[in-house]
Amino acid sequence: MEQTVPAFSLVADAATNSIRYWEPRRLVYNGVLVLVVVVYFAAGLPGSRDALSVDRGLMLFHLAVIANVLYCFAYVPDVFVQLSSLRAAWLRSRWIVFLIGTAFAANIARFVSLHLFA
Image (cartoon, rainbow, N blue to C red; front, side, top):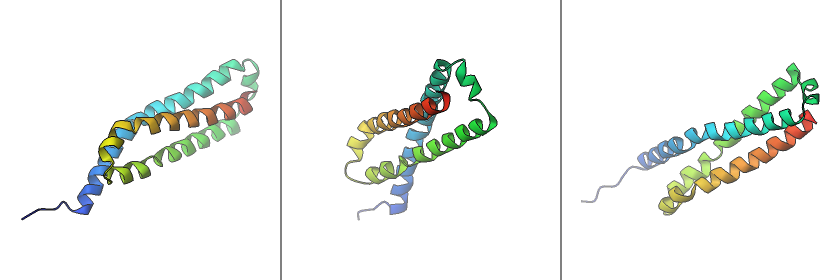
């Protein structure tokens, strides 16, 4: 008699795998975004010091939270594709999604930093 794996177990395994993959990379993602902001702040010195204020600091905090919420969207396609027949290929190539997403977020951080510290 053939035994089948419950659907919940498959979803739980995919979600666990997804968390184990994406969460350590969140540190790299945030590090890249912080680096971009710091570089543009430093490039704008001494004038960028004048841009520092509580309101700007709170705005940067809000933008960091938004960036991390958007990072969480990677879980949706990751879990979905892991549940498909493309799982093996996806597990080998999802680093590409990480690189593209991080580059896109860094580009947004660059434009925001240019506006803040120009």
